[in-house]
Image (cartoon, rainbow, N blue to C red; front, side):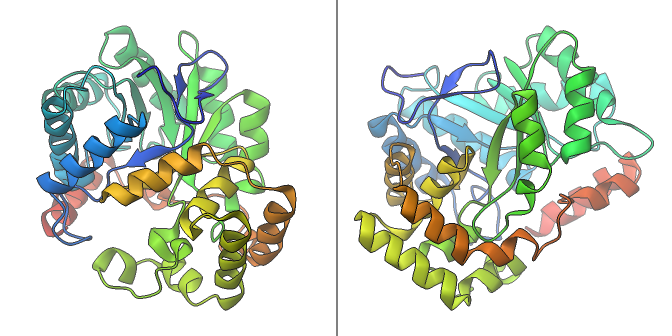
Length: 336
């Protein structure tokens, strides 16, 4: 990592120090967000190099590998491939050592080097348990295919089992869907993560832009997202964010990201433009006044239960056999 690390935090109990906000690159290379390609990658990486926010989150499935490819190429062009901290994810249908190793080797080819942190993208399909994921990740780290390991979309029970199964390497993070408009993790997951010393990374922290003031569903990603649609038309939440922005002299996006940091989470802010990176860097170093945090808590209280109280994102995958999951995602990714 560069010498300047905005809002520096440590992952897990003994993991590396990283910036307080990561840059999410799901948008790169796919079609759900429109045409987001090489130019966007260069713009994002250039701004990240300027601000020190060289903390990137991607996955083998994002753009069917294109996100990793575009990120790696941009990092090389800007001469910061070695300075960046890169998180990638292996698909939850990979339930063999050979499958995980092959996925990470392919990710390394696309990125130009091995990722720093690998996450298991969602819990493995039944009858496999979270222990299977941990064993596969530990084996990958032992082989030098990634520096550290963690999980994604594991609920409280699954996270506890994963941590208890880890023998050789620490489960550093659990990356989950968390924002002002989706507060499900606060019920069970976040208390368990704190108890276990696991960092919570928050994907979807701006509800695809709704919490930054975007109210029009102008692409497929927003059209298909019920959280975006609901947050975009929630006048009370929108007004609270506007008041918080005025009170702090920040944008709504910075406020929404800083609220997550006040809650102890590490936001993964989607980035397609230079301004997205600058806002993320500002949020990494923004501490909201207590009264602003409380106001936003009140304005978003309905989202504590609106989407349920037990974390279930991507858990439908658990009921689909691995080969069928792999086929399904190949078909889906052709269209997006």
